[in-house]
Length: 447
Image (cartoon, rainbow, N blue to C red; front, side, top):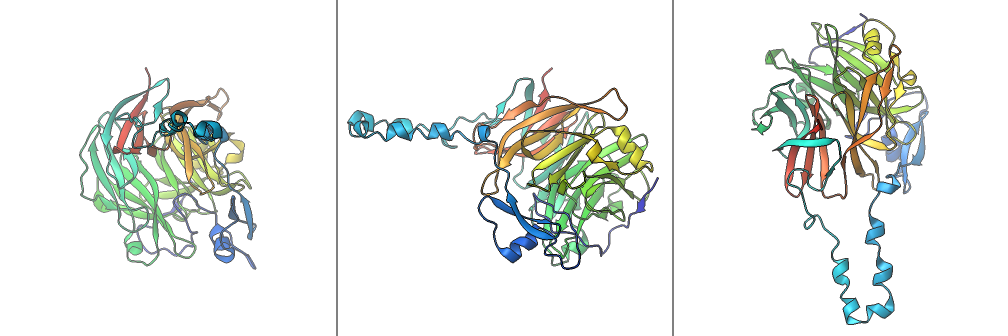
């Protein structure tokens, strides 16, 4: 295998770009460059014009349109806009008609709208069933469950920005009893003692032996690490340098156990934006570059998931409008790269077309679930639905068949939000937040 050695926890000297919770920009440098990333453009030129966002292309600052929320799902404003009837002068003066303000007042608010105790105002779609729920602490940033049939649920808890972020046990599903004993600090001792701002990346992975979580910092170029907590031997836990790490997922091939990391580098494996493998079945851990994003298409890291049948969804943020894209890769194709072959060119792999942007993804049995929607003019993500795509192996070697979009949950208003997507065995765990607090909901494919 072609691996680069991994150094255990210690000081890092590699450069790393600045990362926010939702946007990780690729780093390039050169003589006379105008910018390294969009943040340089914003600092030098101020806010972008309305409806535009700064981007650094070929080391030059440019503005590009912000992708808008899909129109059909954007809102029920036509219903809210029945003002022509309310505003007709003849009716407005008659007392009975003036009293039609009661109708205007029937617009539901989040305080008055009916809320299901489990799903809130979310609508569960045909073909799926909610089979349990449990309260969720307010400070959970990411979730992962152990392999079944008894599922221990773990969480990254703390602040999305800051050094007080740790891994914790929430207990055994569904009778969760969160333990306030920190298992491991997500942030390395060097970065806890440093002055750079720390940004927790919202992922947690359990490969049955280790828990993995990542973060980046605001240091020049921005450094980051993946924390590896050894469940069997906590004293052997470690940190691995991971430039601009954003998401990760567990992948197995034969005797090899690998953490797929969507980043700019991992350990001594570099080469720019792509997907890397942390081989945890080797002692010490080894790293390898496994996949390159389509040439000219990727402007930032994206989402990562691996289905129960071993198909990997490897995502990136578009260099054009920063919307999320993804390609799907058969396990045999990734295994070839792992065992010494060239990194996979994702431009040659099937594209998962979701017909909108998305800002969350998870394994869901032999498929993936994504939270679809789009960003509004205030750069707030407006969710429209959570949908599942079945993924299966094709007849041709290395081919993947992508199923039709199957809605799982639909959003009818903004009163209930989805804060987490994770998997519990072959089922989907959904973090739900509304006026009744936060909770986890288990969703299964109806049998």
